[in-house]
Length: 335
Image 1: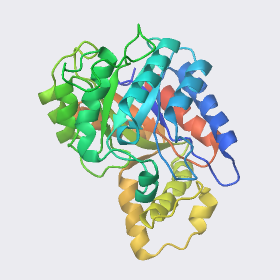
Image 2 (image 1 turned 30 degrees about the vertical axis):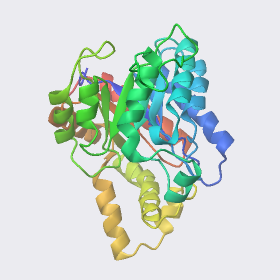
Image 3 (image 1 turned 60 degrees about the vertical axis):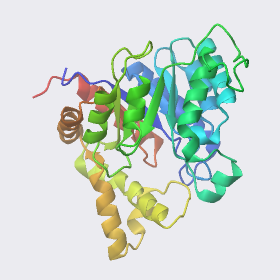
């Protein structure tokens, strides 16, 4: 084995030009089954709203669908954006998922709304300042441990006889790391889009960690964006899709995932080129031979227990092959 760290999948259900939401959802089933067969540990969906190129607006439905289509792999959210949800309803949903697929569900939770301000208001969310209270209410409702003077002390979460699956707190800076540690839950750092270094947050998580029943030891996941191909040239070509996505996001434009041809034909300004260059530095692009040393170095620097891969390229065959190449490389002896 090249390295002891396990691999997992983060899926945004990308919807490319020339495709449809229905086709992209079928693609996710195909990828999840492949990941299951290749030994990936978990398969998470990220909650996003108002983005035509992302089909993962309702992770809880996708989790149920993918868990039914796979056999071994853990399936969960990466994450549910808690401010968009009422804690009781979320507890009921994940109690139900855990009852349907015992021991295979993860509940990853994020602070952000996962969308633009107008869509966020339409969701009628809680404010971010209420996040910690929501977390405590969610866990207290599930376990029946809310204080005697709490307004919901007598509320019962059904189905009974099950508990919430393992909870993970997602972060893109160090703000959530200490909270995750103090609550004794898992932690995942979003290096796939955050320019902040992961190492300080990972260290803060471990230093503040308090053991819990579900997490007797800390467990930290490093989420990274990867485009892996047979050759460096092909990987660079496929990664062009992400270049145009990033530029459009900077302008507040949300569309379908562009093809590499569309991205390469786009007339980037010098300022947009600098945006692309900064974005590329966050990504792992290349062949297994060039990507794995960088992944191993990232794990060494951060102390991550697991690496979660997100690959948002335009073609389904190319996305499947990227995950396949990584799994194959992990099983080969290092040269």
